[in-house]
Image (cartoon, rainbow, N blue to C red; front, side):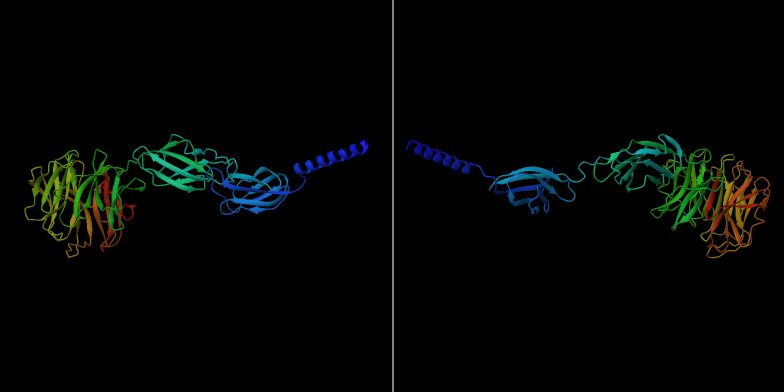
Length: 495
């Protein structure tokens, strides 16, 4: 009986142990994995992100709020992966227990998060501190990237004269041709490189200086888009534009011993005298209250006077003198017959002025000389039919160069048919025709002595009044030797 009781007790204890074990431990069952996927840094939900597990279970995609749920996941430990195009994949560990949720949060970096920035561009040419660069410069540099990403460059150019900045953007080549630079300017340039992932990277700054403006001695006018534009030229005929085609500027006159050029310019319906440096900079207006005026604005001329401290210029029948700074306006002469003064020249050596006058139609021409008081001293040309002009004294004042239409033609269109150049010897009144070999049907106009007075520079053009004007040079002693100097050019000045 005791033995039987012991067996019953043992069975009861075993049954109790088994019952307790079944309540605490389970070796099967499922749970679920929930979570959210956002972008790193700004926590923006990422929709349509692929979420999977390893070991494999279901594959799901996030909704518009970045949330996901994987149901019926067998109990166990998993590596959960989130994948989205344009972002770096990421893994998180999750342990699933029966009938429980395990929550996983993913913060995904963009795909380029580990991308390195480009290397700083290396400037190649012009070399730093380069000088005498032309006005068109090829800038070159070397750009590299650790991942060989495609690079886009930006070039910035500053200068030491003003606050202007040149910017060139969206460049894919490592060479940039820069045009339209100015003379004698120091430029500073820097290149930035971008891989469109990281912040742009800057090169060091290089500088270069352009060539100085050439010391040209010939100046002339050319019409561009309806406006007169002033140029200079060297002895080989290389041209340099000095005034903008947006303004009407003509009749350049170089000062004899200073680097200044005077010229006429339209301003508010009037014609005024201006000055500028020989490179076209530092433009300043001289005349104001009494403008340059008279017969045919393109025929009007003026001149430097008194060691280039003053100007003399016409206003209808009066001749005025004015200081270079615009002060001291004085009338110094008035014609006796109400003719208009059209041209004037001054000789420093003799202190005399030569004047050409004409009536309102351009005729009844008189060329004469006056002293500083306005007294007429000598008549060079008068009492003839036809047009005349182009006054220029020799250096010593003993000769006067001018033009005259030997045809004597007078017409309402002021058309000249056979204009010749003449040199008048003031002491003897001898006149020498230097246009004997002029091509038939053409006019020689606007003559000026060369600086050494061995040559004359002038305009030759067809007498039809509409054809192109060209600048020609002749040797005075061999007047048959005509050399074309500049095409489509007029109003020469040679100092």
